Image (cartoon, rainbow, N blue to C red):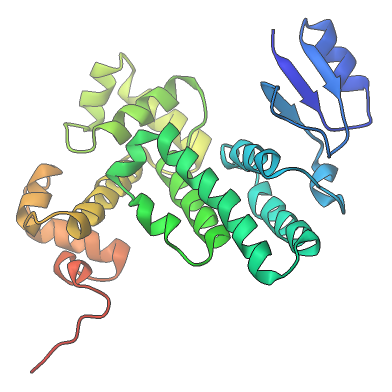
Length: 259
């Protein structure tokens, strides 16, 4: 049994959930969400003029929206920022409050999903001047790396994300996860609209980009760790994604060539 907070005046869904054995509370948008396992809200909730709540309420709602892929995170961030700005004494206080909430969400995401540290630097997001934009960027990166939500396919993807430098060829993964290789391709394409082989390339190149800027490994060593036996092919694949060679990507952005 779950404790569910329903942010709606429509009692139909609440009756259905209660009938299924859940403990349900009907509340307006200002209700505290600390004690609930699940929050349900209609789409209209995100267009309400008032979404007032404590910093912790906002943090928890942002975390709930971060896990979704319905595009509501940016809308909620905008309205939260407007609410905070109207209640704060000045712009500096409003920014401090909003930044604190967003930083808390970023920290919580990295703590919950430890595999992120294999691809992204947490400091890059928490040190950003615009914390809301950093949170949205993190969400975009997160959903690219973890395009599936639930099911045995997510278990497969999480294995890949936690082991990007191991043997993650499709046939090897199928054998390890007791899945049919063709089934993996078919289901992945149906659920994400992309090819599984392209996803594997994305994971490898994201890991390569992280290693280039966060390690002293040579380019050929990074390629070898990611099972690219042809350094030329690795460089072409990397450039196709990032618009520059691995060596150029490693250079600091403010690097100045002296002739």
